[in-house]
Length: 136
Image 1 (spheres, rainbow, N blue to C red):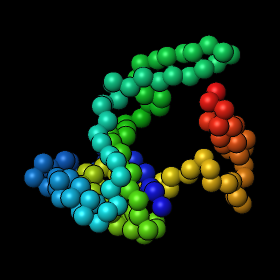
Image 2: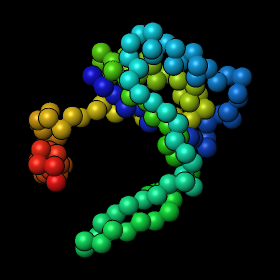
Image 3: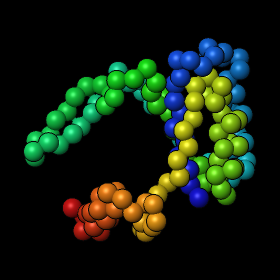
């Protein structure tokens, strides 16, 4: 199963120490284990652009959507056997020490909505799937 790791800053975390940044080793391990799919850094929040559509009008604003001290600094997509393996890999990422990592399973559009997932999200997901199928 694919998992997305949101690599986040955390102002309350210990200060970044370049000598302890073993990202090269982490990337090498994810590749050696065959779980690496894709990942990269993201530009700072000052470079963000937020797009919304309200009443048919496209509204573009500079900066992030949310005002927060924490921000997403990067991402990784891993293909792990289960959540336990995803947690293990996330715990080895240097930003688990200098920031925080949020793990979320990827939810493909062709995967049905079931049980507790059947909320208001269902209509949105069905609409997105229909739009993908029709190219709209």
